Image (cartoon, rainbow, N blue to C red; front, top):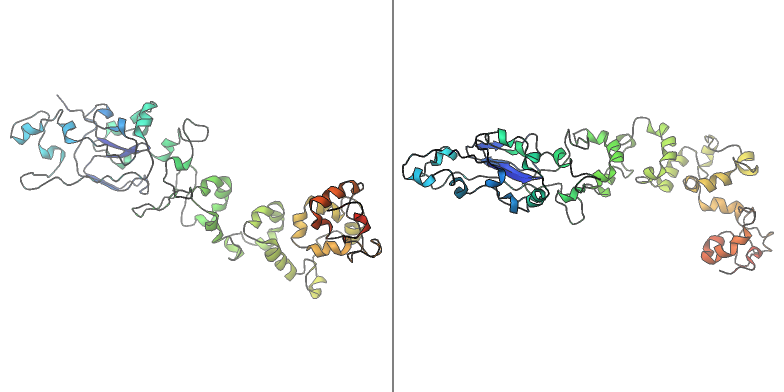
Length: 397
């Protein structure tokens, strides 16, 4: 009877590697996931057409570190090993060098060991078998090869056929990839290999030597994917606002940045502090109320003429713009600038003013809300009003 022995190592999602007299270099498999193997065996899967579970004990395997290779007694079910050792003839062949090429038990204590390190993944063969996942779905061509190697282990895109958001199985990266105490994926493996996406990976992200130049678009499109491995502190090594602008922004960014800064202020503030970084630079070129007097004469116009911006009620009035986007105003103006006009005057407050011009910033009917606001946060009101200000009469903090 011909032995139809299927010898391949199911190492994770779902496979460990296979048997073969070879050192699997795995050029198309990540060495961080599937470490290098040494498989000093001779075997022919194409000849042994048995069910995988007849030789591999994967039905009870719940970890990628499980050793699922068949032991000698499994092979002995068809190969009469003891008869061959005694000098008898067998069919199929059963001498030691049938499977261990070059081994002579009269001169060697044992065959060269098989080295198949566990995959750096979490995987449960038993669970997948219970759910009806056939071996061939992950080890597609194993029945057609002689020696199965790392080339017969599944690529990530195979796993993603089921493991994705809304799929049959969870799409969380940490469900399969080892993670650290902080929940982020382990990027450096015990064998010294680093887990990084490569060209052709399912996310379309290639961490090449020049990747830093264009990683921003990937980071915006797949922020959660980046966050699975990277902490924000890693981004700030470059994006803390201390490096030269053109190293992280396109050419002539100083000229081009106003429009993107206006529409993506929160993104800018992930690296830059408006009051310290933006305002300081603007004041150096004469933009902003704190700019040096000699520069103010050359000041670029940022606001409409004062008659529209300050005096004339309407869409162009600064109060309307401040109510819409106070953060933009605060990027150049300090609170003292507002109080200078809007704080109560001594004349309007019966001698209890804050030294301002007494120009009220409040809309009609605001008095009905004043008491509740004063009781919730008196500090805001007292910026412009003294405690004895008649405007606060009848309200108590």
